[in-house]
Figure 1 (cartoon, rainbow, N blue to C red):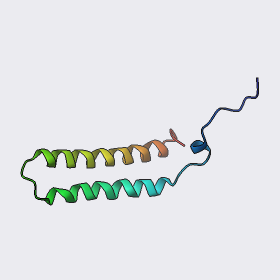
Figure 2: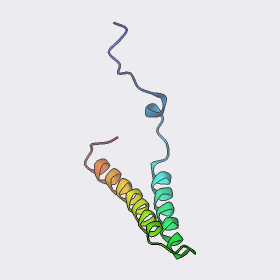
Figure 3: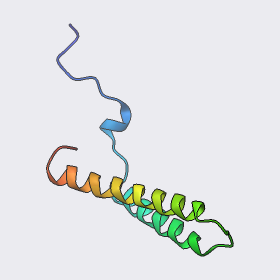
Figure 4: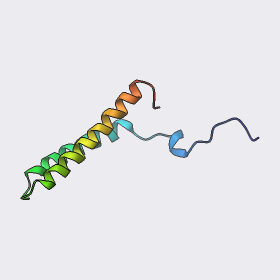
Length: 73
């Protein structure tokens, strides 16, 4: 055996900017919601825009909750 050190990828040793990613996701969700006031006729586009914005916000909220509970590093 070479050692007892766990195998990790380079991005695990040097994590990115978490806050910047969260802010980017929230701004993207707001941009998606702003697109509802576009020049489309059907409601299918509105459903997709709201759904994608909600998905981004759920991911950000889930990440915050998991980090607060210590389940993610």
